[in-house]
Length: 231
Image 1: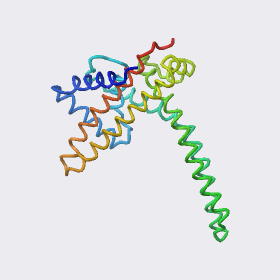
Image 2: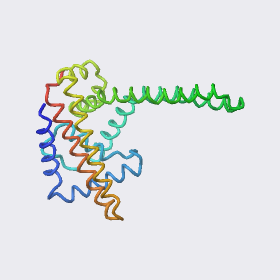
Image 3: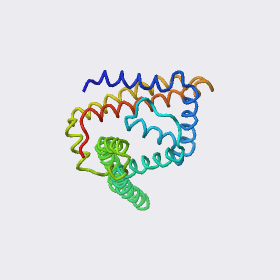
Image 4: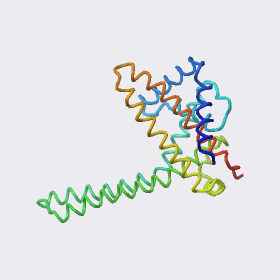
């Protein structure tokens, strides 16, 4: 995979989708704010991102609000299901750690018990983090499969998902995601500086966040299409 070309094509796609189409950009920025304020309970922007992840070119129009809402919630559900194992592990170890800390406190602050409780809490956090990272690489491909097929069930067609990653190459897919994370880190640093500008900074950031959402969705779509999807 030529990562530089994928980045370049994703940038061009984003530019064509937004520059000169200011009303669409404004609408998407508003949808982004609504989604943020409602904590993704009204995930209209996510619904639009699903269309971009599906590989639609040129960038689709913002329409079919019910469809956007439904697709946005499907994306929420897929993300939640894939992260459940990490959440459960953290809750178990975190719960044991919290109980241990409470018990040690009740027992006049037994340092041995307190240490064990803290280690349980830290260990649970680290284990949950490792599980979340591993599942994230699979979940991204699952989301892309859902977007391309339009079927929620295909996001959990594990044999096809793993076969697709195998066709891409695990190393290729992992590097593709890492490259995107590096770009996201740089973007976040720049937007963080812009956001520090009173009032105007937040407005600019809202529009830039939409642009970056389109960029990463197109990037992932192009990476997904580097290898034919299994039936």
